[in-house]
Image (cartoon, rainbow, N blue to C red):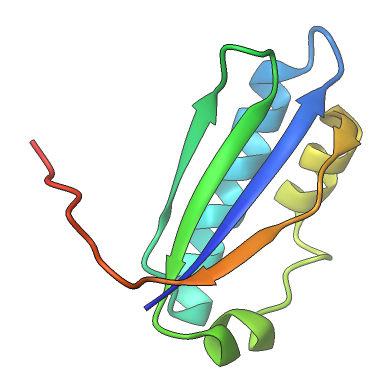
Length: 97
């Protein structure tokens, strides 16, 4: 399994627009590209973080949704975007409630 971690700093007041855009993109990527989904977090330092899981790196790399309307909503809301952190799952002890 493959993971991608994304992080952003948002423009003040644009949080709702970002969340809506992120949800649209995430639903489309899951339905059309085979991702395992994602979680979005508001971090204590004021940044936002999303964690996405994929079957493998090739599946993620083959998925392009830059023209999706949700992606544009996200771009407009972002003040700063940090580098993606990509990795292979080595051990998974996450227990869903």
